[in-house]
Length: 370
Image 1: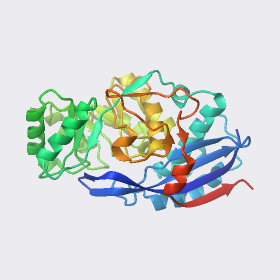
Image 2: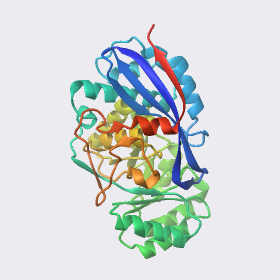
Image 3: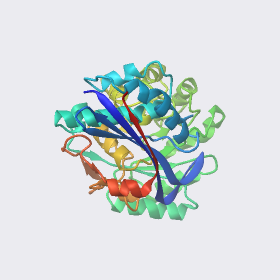
Image 4: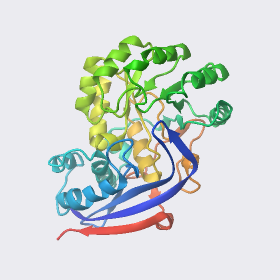
């Protein structure tokens, strides 16, 4: 297929509730939608997961727009592509900027699957007809409110509860949750809020039977996590530290992690995410799919990825209604008894709702081959 045109839409959607972590609070989600066209007029869709501010990675909505407009899209226009795995080679002269790369690579994966007449899940090698779903809960004002939320999500069927923690909102919060829900699969996400100086505090988390603690130490660290893992019974899951299958290899060999959170945007796209999945499956390391507060397009890509066989732990891909009053796809993502059905229609398996997209769109740019 030859890439003839790319459209970028800048979006603004308001979440139902604010979402708080150790590094900030947000409610309005600004992001980019990518639509990539081939010579036959077919199109595929991708979604950038970069935030407004560089507090998760160094990327932002504006830096992604710059990289896409001035570097990545010019490298693609007019190019003949036989498989999405080739996109990474085209982008290899550009360092970093994984979220920008992933947004357009995801659109090409969708386009590729549509041209083949198969689902994105099938194109990736997915095997599951449905995926288990967990829920991620931001830092709450009080424990009682958190317990109420957890109870509600358990009643909705979610299979795993993840809570955000930070210094001053950690041990007591988890003790209270575990007391209220003795048998619930529970994990804590620290978003790099601690250091090795907090080992004694972090060792207290072993008392709560957690599935894992996610990214307790620095966002760019692998070495100190190996030191910490030796002191903890609780498995450490790495998130922000992992940008490639090479990062995973080093972390596994050092003993820095026992679980990997795979985020498509963070690792540069579906092709690299699949390579990470394959390596971890070979090494017996379980993986799960993390969330970045995606709208429907990004959520659809996560569902397809999670259909691969080594995604053995429930991910963060909650239903559309958890975050949005109205999503930008039809049908919206629905969770039933803690499961999402993997679509079998071609491509991402959901139809972008152009009317809703236009409602939330704040700007648009078109790029065409010469």
